[in-house]
Length: 487
Image 1 (cartoon, helix red, strand yellow):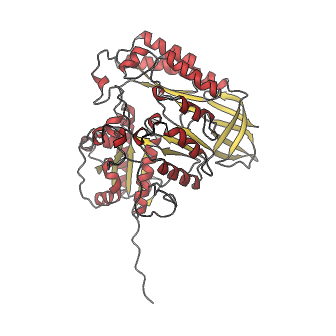
Image 2 (cartoon, rainbow, N blue to C red):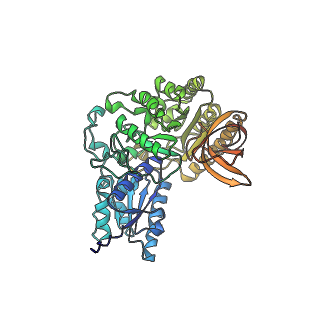
Image 3 (cartoon, helix red, strand yellow):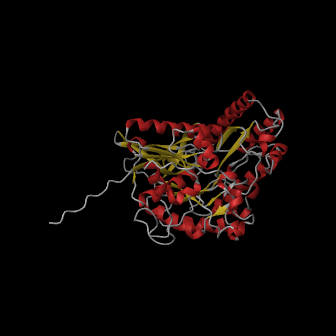
């Protein structure tokens, strides 16, 4: 009898993802590449021989959280199981060699250009070969200035990869473009990247410099990704990008999203499609209609207002003011009265006056938003705003953030109260058996993932499962969270 050769054990690797849903998609690309190359994916860093931390480089607190997470992972090496800790993602791309010098505890810092070769890179690092970190560059300069000239360019764009060879079942769609992806979160919602990068030049934002110029994924690739996600139990597609309103402009059709949304909603197994991050200045009437009135598309508007005082918005290199924003909201609600609307605002921007804060607060009171994120301004390396006069001290910024945050919490709680008696369709994300029934939690159409609150269904039967869509009536609320009974 011929003795069979022994099989070499797979190297275990864990991915820790910080930041936004776009980073979640990027981590799933890395997971697919690693698993295809023979690595074993594990959920917990404690069980891994290699740990990849997908970092966030958005604002100061996100940077600190990323660094702390990398350093915490390096402590695992004392156990003897974890052999290497690698930083990837936005912070790694943004600072490269500088970050590597600041964190000698990490075994390597990899940029976006390393993603296609992540498996051999990681094997080399585990073998003890020193990795030379990249020198950061402005990734906007890697692509042509004219958007329609970008699609054939060979620049690496995380989350957009299409595989040339066949991938194993469960990693990519069975037909169509071979999207490189392996799910790490098996809930009924999944982010779906439709584009990356940004062509806007907001004076406070550094994201375009390390994420690059705006690039759309082709509709065939987006649809292939959507169909595959549906086979993995996904019921809600969360379309993500840095600026969804620009989708298609580099493909020769700036209204392409209006046509793509109905196709996504028609994918077998998908119950609803949600679009994130819409620029108010680019929100076309046709796109308002497509979101408000397409069956299967959530009437949900994630509007990046940032502020409401016109002159201050000009300093931010933004467009609009309180009056224009309120008119936009009126247009949306005329078409979809129960539409969900969320936004983020920046407080303490250089030159912001007490009057500007009052304009912002008055706007928030009139806008009736479902969710409001309040951020205190901080200087970002390489941005125009970092050079502005009129800088406010940290204590003043903190005080203004506290005032606006308190108001935002009060207003969004009032908005939730006005939904009492409203009939909602809840995508179930958690079910815990309880005394013959179940504790059920999910999200209504107006509630985006993670940041917009949840809906708890009381009096639910034990037969409800994660991924079900339950019709219910809102009976009470707690802050932005709703409590509903099955209809």
